[in-house]
Image (cartoon, rainbow, N blue to C red; front, side, top):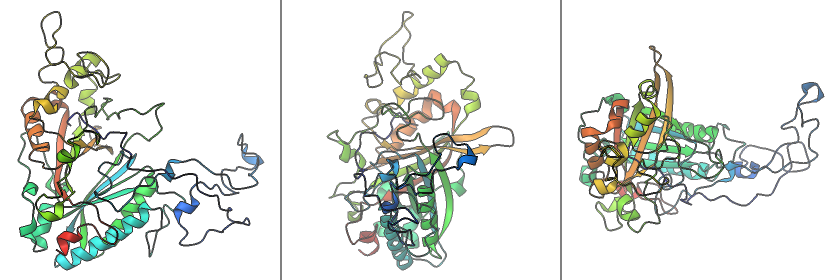
Length: 436
């Protein structure tokens, strides 16, 4: 788990102004009906909503409002589907996420894949705009706004052989090397196609997941699916770096778009190879289980020594605040390094790895309790880089050789996906590959 996370100042998601307030159902305003945009519903509380009668005894809700009441809500956040890059990469991390991989069905090839990506792109465009999915919409998110929904698509190594496009497979998509700490479940790894869904509302995220699954039809079958979450925007008094399930501030040194070499590190250049990957990126996905019972037995000082940062505020053990540069040479009165030699934050620093950097955009997960009472919980690690051989791989190799955190985590699934650039107006994601 390299010490980086998505920068909260990234302003890809935009929040429109307060929308006009249509009348509530049964009033003189516009009635609800099939096909009504969720964006139009956002900010409207119906006359019968949020009300308990006198018998209910609800304090503060003795009677219904005489007119619909506008709501201010995270639901108003909207991210654009079309653009230079796909959404969901530099978008601020959402509170709910789904990662799902598909394999093309037997007999499905390039033609079927193109039709599938066309369907998926149109569905993603509609849902991200707060509109119904199209035919047979389930109405799960009918009352919600876009909620900063993003849907991101990628291609796995096997996709190219299945579609006869082996010559277009990027060298950067070669399988990741084996790491000694891996305990990978092949059934929950890799896949021909990968979809990342994020939203600030759980129902909006599920609605998108269900729509994508239904759109797959007979062309592709789900290989694996993982569900994650993060702290909800606005849950803290002021913007803060997120914490993981170990309670650690996680992501202090994530690359920021304002940095001059950000695009060079994260995105394939417009002149890059293959041409269809221009402005795209490569996603490494790892299901990392945290051995929380073992971790929570450590003292606070021991936990901080493993990470190399204070648990309270994420500041380096060498002093300062969260953003203070870590002093790797500082020693205590006994001459011992203040930041231990095998501390996670020391090992993952870009200047300790030849400048290797990646944009972390993870979700936490909790999939219940095992039969032996151990929580199945941890991190759905997702990182983005222009080339995984210069981003993820060198950092993970170094972690593999001596990271103090490795005793308390287990890598259980893995995938690498080529995520092409964003679709222009009138295009679908991957069109330059599938129709080039």
